[in-house]
Image (cartoon, rainbow, N blue to C red; front, side, top):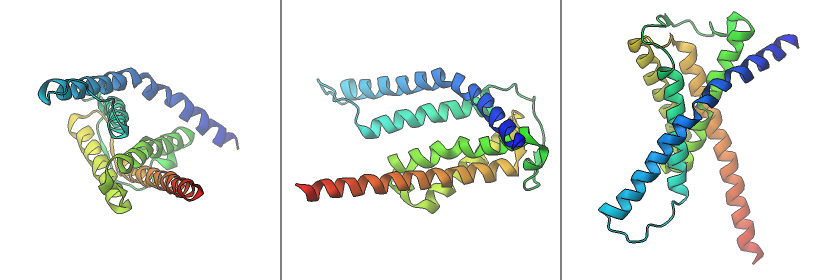
Length: 190
């Protein structure tokens, strides 16, 4: 029980770091909205640009997420500060409460991917495609960390990130089914 409490404390403490990067994400999302507005106004010649719809807002949230993810994985670390490859499965988990927290945090880090990607892109509604894209994104991040020496390249990170994308997809699917069911019930009531 005490170990579980320690793990939760580490996770809550570690969540402060990505929370501190939200202003960067918000700035990137704001720049996207500004670019979208200028595109519609100037290049498309619309005199009155309509408000962003659900698809644009999902893109903005996705941009905020990717910006925070990149800041967390790369730009918060000095080049050359972390080197090494760890290809031993579950080696992260074996290290005690702090290591357990890192393991769980890597799952949590890709939950938004698994939720946002299928919400915005119909192709990602296929669970295999979404999880595969989460896997590829995780591989890209780990290889980029290896090349830039801004993070340890770990097999555990790829596995836990992929698991996070899969769990995120399951969350999206549950919410999506409930929304569809509610809409169907609303139509039959009237």
